[in-house]
Length: 88
Image (tube, rainbow, N blue to C red; front, side, top):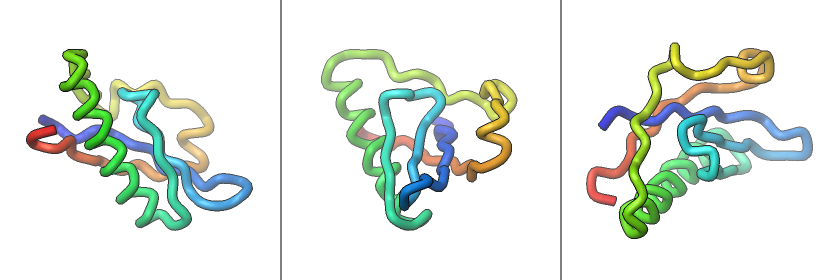
């Protein structure tokens, strides 16, 4: 499966928040970009396991051109690709 697109954004108070456009309920954070990314990988793994356990369908990852771009995403975000686990 293709990796999911994730956005890492600096928060005004402190740290970084990670969101997945294809999985709005799957979020994570960290005090550094590296920690935020690692935490996002873990959050994605847990989310995939939950979907599998409940029998819910796993959405297909969007391509970059399919993501609805907003001014906020363009100005202050870092885009990363995070692969779902092979066996969630």
